[in-house]
Amino acid sequence: MKAARIHEYGEPDVFRIEDVEEPTVGSNEVLVAIRASSVNPIDYKIRGGGQRSVVWLSMPSKLGLDLSGVVTEVGAKVTRFAVGDEVYASPSHRRIGTYAERIAVRESELAHKPKNLTHEEAASIPLVGLTAWDCLVGAANVQPGERVLVQAGSGGVGTFAIQLAKALGASEVLTTCSPRNHELVRSLGADVCIDYRTEDFEEVASGVDVILESIGGEDVRKAIRTVRRGGRVACITAGLPGYTEQYGPALGLTAMVSKTATRMMCAAIGRNVKLRFVTRKASGENLQAITDLIEAGKIRPVIDRVFPLDDIADAHRYLETGRARGKVVIDVASA
Image (cartoon, rainbow, N blue to C red; front, side, top):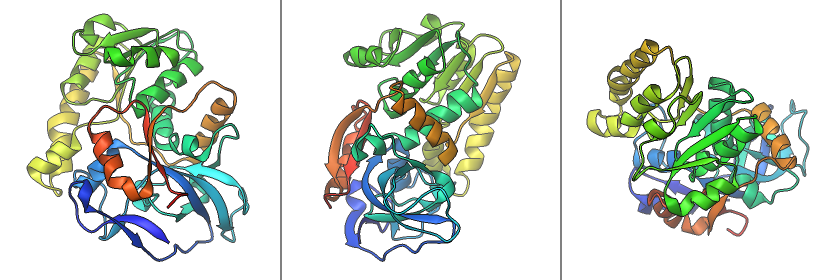
């Protein structure tokens, strides 16, 4: 089968489109013929070597953490899926490889694809959807009537989180983004748009109940000061690639915890703020709950561009510009 692999860490040019061996299917696994995948910031951080403290690759390695496709084989112990089912998933970081024509995925990580989405649309959802779910439902437990600030509202996680916050009953959703994206985020349910270049979210969003923080660094400290006392902050980045570059893969994670996470936790305790650093769980159960919201019309995909698998390097370059609105999707079916 065809797959995009890297033989070393580096810039997007390290990708090679190659013929590789077919995956084997375990008793609790499902073989999926992938129709579409997508690119996330974590993908180019892994490709560049910035995640080596937590994600070790055996070279050459396939990348990719989103898929939508069709079941072609099921393991002996699989009960929830059958050949021909349309499914989608975001596999575990330890089993990445969706930039390929086929992949074996654990049954527990799969969900049925929303019936009202194409494969390209569905492939844009799993990683960002599960990340937003783990932040707003798992870590922050957003309640009806609460005010929620979503950082970087025009990005992949942001466009999903705005809609999820509204679906959870938030009375007001605030978000940071540039003026060119105000119309987009308002169409998704944002009530207040904060221009991060000219406005300080610490002033505009003061006293919110929940913040989904996706920038890292000083913005985490600002989020702790911004949220009300007793509020919740869910963070999806703590600057690991930077620490890996400075201290190396062996010490990067240790340096991040000692220099960033520990200090921020102390600051949060001082204000009685619940601070959680969130890593997305590869959960088919949570993804099925997301499917229900999508089929109910409460959440829709936001796609910026679609690239063929052969142009995976260009897709990575484009996402790294920081200009993408929503998701960058990979068409695998045309490979």
